Length: 332
Image 1 (cartoon, rainbow, N blue to C red):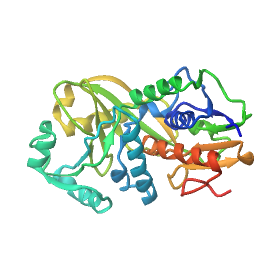
Image 2 (cartoon, rainbow, N blue to C red; image 1 turned 120 degrees about the horizontal axis):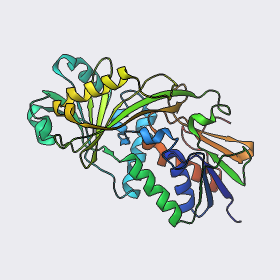
Image 3 (cartoon, one colour; image 1 turned 90 degrees about the vertical axis):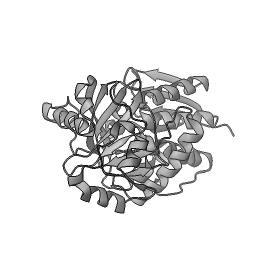
Image 4 (cartoon, rainbow, N blue to C red; image 1 turned 180 degrees about the vertical axis):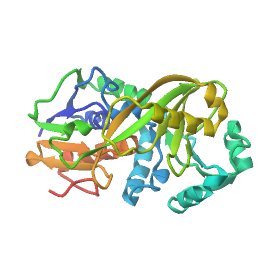
């Protein structure tokens, strides 16, 4: 029996991984994206792209951590440019309680004092007295990883069409990965705003993502190479995808300055915001409709890069032998 043709709708990180996994499994895949490229409309372009299952356990169900560990394994087995240098979580002395709470809610970390922090990140020598080091974690450059997936799809013979919209009619099977764009079909989705700034400086060098804990606005600083850093806020409960406000920009840049004063002289290359789709429990879903002809993969929240390969593997398993295993499949 021949495999069905697959239409994947949406070329964010969920859609790219779905198309990639299915093309590798031998399906005929057509990927369509309303934007001019994977980065034009998708919230994925604004991601810090941290593959950090242990840190995510601080604010997510344990199922996300466990699935994320599998996601990390798949990334490492698949993507050649993953940066496996761990994650460093720090806080200023006045916020020691936040660091203790983070430690109590997570696993897989080692408590580190000032000298060890300086060993890990010489640029941070003398800046923080205590931290947590999650050695097993990793990160990727979001746009570079997405471009790699597009290139792999083309090598596998997938048909990729940008500036193309779905009319709601499946071919053999449609995999709907439109994110917040699927809100009319998935009314339980809500939007969660993620903001980031891309900066460049040669005066600070980091080898791994650094998360700065703060009671009002925790931030992350993710090195991208060539002196570039992504500075972002983890969660803002707003559906607005408009430009960043002056206050938000000042908060992010001020927090980066609190990580290291040399960031105060950095060049701002880009700033903006995207709206992440989320369900009420912040766990992604695979929803099978129309007797299996439509499969909706949505609800990334802040776990898109972490869980995209796990969701792709689960959908491939379902299409292969109708398996609906694990917590990702919504009840029929």
